[in-house]
Image (cartoon, rainbow, N blue to C red; front, top):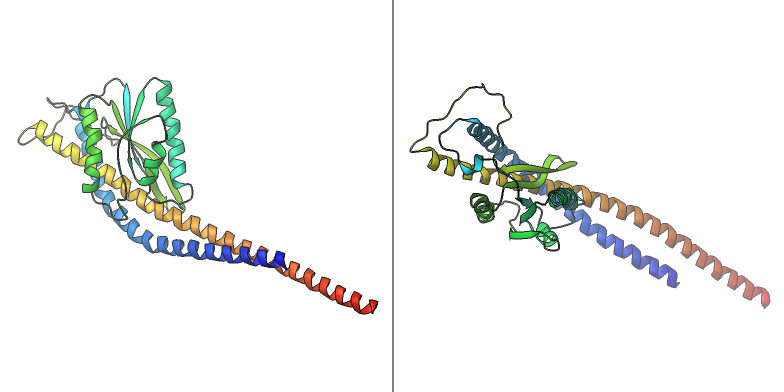
Length: 286
């Protein structure tokens, strides 16, 4: 019964695949809660910093930091955040597809695009494209630290300060809930004004020792906090997407096993029927 043996081999293979997908699903399910807690704990600081910097952008000061100055767009940069591992459904591909659309729009306007990547998937993807990849960092783990990101952030900040870049954007997956992750693009530089309503009059902060040194330090920490928050959002999104994708894969494997078992039983029944017919035919011939 060669056909039966082949079907049994396929069933065994699918069962082994289901074991892997179930294990990955359970691992992501155990990690997602901690990832969500770390993500939510970092959100208040990032939101407060965003509001403060927005007010600084609207303030009237004798010193205008380069990060607050608008200029003609000739070259833009993207900090792209992705996962290091796959098997997360369309999480990374959806982000890359949307980002490619924006890159083409800039290129159609004659604007050049530079990219730095965080995560193995983004690094591998953008190496194949006709964009300048300035730097990359991979294998940051499930509990990334700001120190791992400082170098790659500095590449973009230096490019903007030196005038090589006129806009800097942050591309990442925003965690909405376990079932939904949204590809998001935030403008980092120049810093956008606060969305909160403020009184329309001239106002400013009092800086000690001086506006240049204070703003330089605060704005750099602000950019680092935004990138770190995006990485934490992406980690939570990765575990959620992988858990959902692996559950779907396990369910599909179960359905396939049931189908193959039905086919095997039919093939086995047909083989038994054929053997009985041969025996009966042989006995009648005698």
